[in-house]
Length: 123
Image (tube, rainbow, N blue to C red; front, side, top):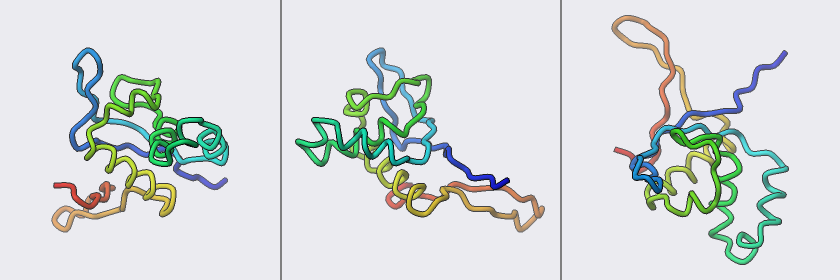
């Protein structure tokens, strides 16, 4: 049996503020499917505004963001620009390149672990 990683953890640089003022930074994104593409293509707002298609697609593939488990385009419209850019690049990386983490080994103790690749512009 082949084991394929389909879900990836991420941390937003700034985070999403919900209506109650709670900050949500930790999330999980899954790989996109053909069905996701079809749903986005049928989305009227995405048809009228290609920039909105990215938000519609992210709402399909983000499983959770902090305590939030229902991710809608309306919710993601409230992202800070830096976080939207981060999510777009993260989406592209896991769907185009297939992995967001690399295996590493501590040079001192030889412990093996995985490290999330830094996105461009992250500090």
